[in-house]
Amino acid sequence: MQRRKFVQNIGLLSAGVILSKTGLAAAPGQFPVVRVAADKRHFRSEAIEAAIKQFKSSVKDAEQSWLFENCFPNTLDTTVFHEVVNGVPDTYVITGDIDAMWLRDSCAQVWPYITFIKNDAKLRELIAGVINRQARFVLKDPYANAFYKDANKISEWKSDHTDMKPGVHERKWEIDSLCYTIRLAHGYWKESGDTKPFTSEWKNAIALILKTFKEQQRKTGPGSYHFQRETDKPTDTIPMDGYGFPVKPTGLICSMFRPSDDATIYPYLIPSNFFAVVSLKQAAEMVKTISGDNALSAELLALATEVEAAIKQHAIYKHPVFGDIYAFEVDGFGNHNLMDDANVPSLLALPYLNAVELSDPIYQNTRKFALSDSNPYFYKGKVAEGIGGPHVGKPDMVWPLSIIARGLTSTDNEEIKLCLAMLKRSHADKGFMHESFNKDNAANFTRSWFAWANTIYGEFLWETLKNRPQLLG
Image (cartoon, rainbow, N blue to C red):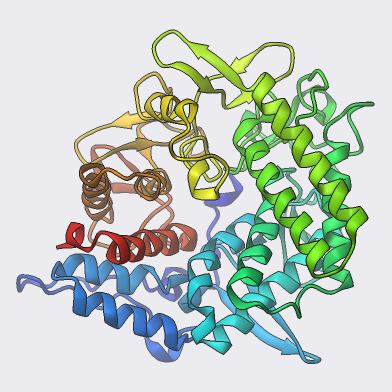
């Protein structure tokens, strides 16, 4: 799978994840320095360094403090490439061990820093640079999920049967890729009040997102997008000449791949449609308030309303054990795929994205389902319990993202404490989060350098410190 490939020239040392030969220091409460050296870090934020200092002085648990110091700044330390070109901020963000910028990952990696930008002009400029670059990427190809910094670079996936362009790393159509770009832009605007990134180019990107969403409602045919890959992994390619299994038009939007970059079974991916509703409403607010474009705003809101109604009509399944729950995928013909996946958006993470209220009874039923053995990708073992998925190609692999999403969407102190404890057990003496780990053996993990997991884990710890500090003691 492409996301297993490591960047050979950067290596794990750049991630700051190589421990000393002796592993953890012998003295109680002492841990080795694994954060990349200060002179090797890609970006320094005074606000984030102050947050690290505050966390360490407030939390008595030395291991939690060590993990926060390593993980929260990992995106800034190792994955951002920021510059100002002709007076305009520009920021390229790799995922970690892959030298490409995913629209989803890059947003998710810097999102936890949004609340700090008021007090850090350089950090604000860095995130503005992400917004600027993402707008250009969307305009290059709204169906692509990952891009290169070099606009002329030819992808290792150039043989994929789809409309590959220079500068595109991969062209897997995922609704959430476009939603994340809106989420970051909206969050930045609300926190900073700055409108400089929201130029005519950015508005054109929003208009193209709307056009793409409408095309993928597939009301008059499959649309222009198709994708096939010569591979022995069925989750890396799309059936039926690359257009996917049939759907009945409902108003929902087709997503041929999940946030995991795995192919959908039924193309109406419900967590991503929920996310689209939120994002369309946010985009509508922005183009109306910032650009004064009432017509485009009305179109965005109309689509949000249509998708929201279609979710209510087609995405709810009456489960014999849990009652009404949200399906993971549907096809409009009455078929439902009942599962949840670890990547965000997931059914479990919907409140984190403000897509449903935490108190929504259907969500609560869905949450119970997702965290039970009725979910085929829920695993429970000696180290942890949590949700995985087919992406890593083997069972029993729990993703920290699912445990973090569970903690961020819980109001139960005992459940949050459980999530904190499981995450602390999962790092296998490395001091960083991983993509996944075996439920019974944390030393069996995938991806030593996965910045999204690191930074959102830091977000979870920071939110816990702010709202429930007693749980970190």
